[in-house]
Image (cartoon, rainbow, N blue to C red):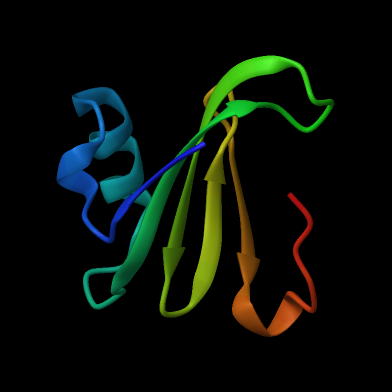
Length: 77
């Protein structure tokens, strides 16, 4: 996993455009991380974006999943 500053500019243009379309204009990005494992622990590229409201994941197939911060009680990596 590669952790980055809270800025979409560190992502490839494809990921940057996809995340920009998902975020609200007043949503603040706190952190961005690129991961090399999927949910089944197989090698696959995915991206996580933590905002002031939620955790947003872009899966290897391009789909998004989002969790509100109030929904997250713990996180296992």
